Amino acid sequence: MQLAHIALWTRNLDQAAAFWQTYFGAHVGEAYHSQRRPGFVSRFVQLPDHAGQIELMTGPWLADAPQAEHIGWDHMAIALGSRAEVDALAARCKAAGCLHAPPRLTGDGFYEAVIKTPDGTRIEITA
Image 1 (cartoon, rainbow, N blue to C red):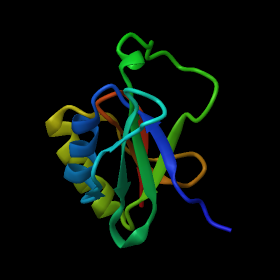
Image 2 (spheres, rainbow, N blue to C red):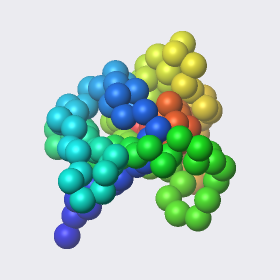
Image 3 (spheres, one colour):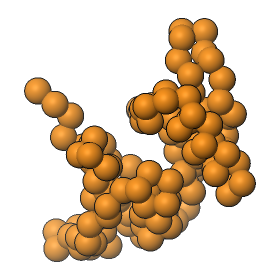
Image 4 (cartoon, rainbow, N blue to C red):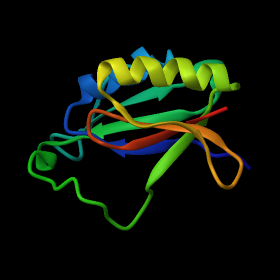
């Protein structure tokens, strides 16, 4: 068994796609426009080395959706492979204004930083 993909709602599909391309070198597929649910559009993001897929989804009903925490997934973690890679990506994200928490060694032994997507979804980047 393996995880097929993770889905994220976004208010701005192009901005979200650019985030994944810029910071993770992901390949973003073409937009899919649903015939059965008018206004629903999605794009699949393929992480390098087939590390996983993320489905970015949007619809006009999200324009006024609150950004508050809610029941459900809180964040995802992406292992970059080394502390140096975490430090480098954290530095890029700090310069771009999307670093949420700087690199640190957690109490449970992870070396991580936390970045945020344009919609505020947290992503832990780990060594």
